[in-house]
Figure 1 (cartoon, one colour):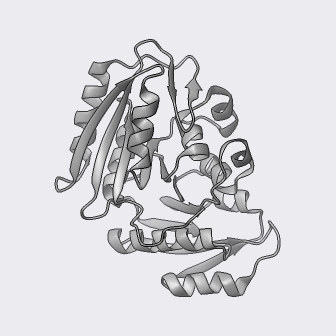
Figure 2: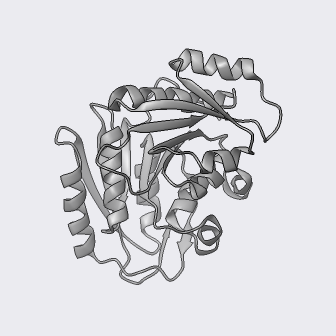
Length: 265
């Protein structure tokens, strides 16, 4: 996978809106993290038949709740109220199944990040039920923000996972950019329980992206990342897709973390 270091992760944002408080929170957090000249597309999936397919490729949401056009419209209005006024905001409403697939995919492939709210599904439940978050974490062609409830000052603290790899460097660059933009405090975290770590490479990433505090944790990477005390956890993705992504540290940590998580691709 080619890692692009010259594009702001929050330059072009797609935010999934289903009218829930979780999706509105995702829009709010995306607005807080947005680049100054970012564009935002609010995408609503009308699920009047209580069954919809969404994802890269299609991921069925079995027995999903009905979502009407009126609910989506109200959700758009609430999301716009949470976004900074200077951002360019568009709306797209699509109906399923299975029509939404090509439209949503086209929108997302032009995005640098997709933001969705966490509805509290565990990773195991997400795999079985085909939750939107699980589908995105496995298959999205861009970075993914999984938003969890946060205070008005979001983000006050950012933790970035660093292992010295090119993918963690990209995550650290994104985290440092967001910290500078928002005034958040940034810390690096290296997990030493998952195998041998080249601390020279880790220190190089920290030195090149801001020389912030670096913490070490003796647990394995998933446990260490899942228990961070922060408003936003930033992790790099190795670009795994589909079944191969089931063992991904970033995907597993995103489901288990207690805070919002940005998976950087």
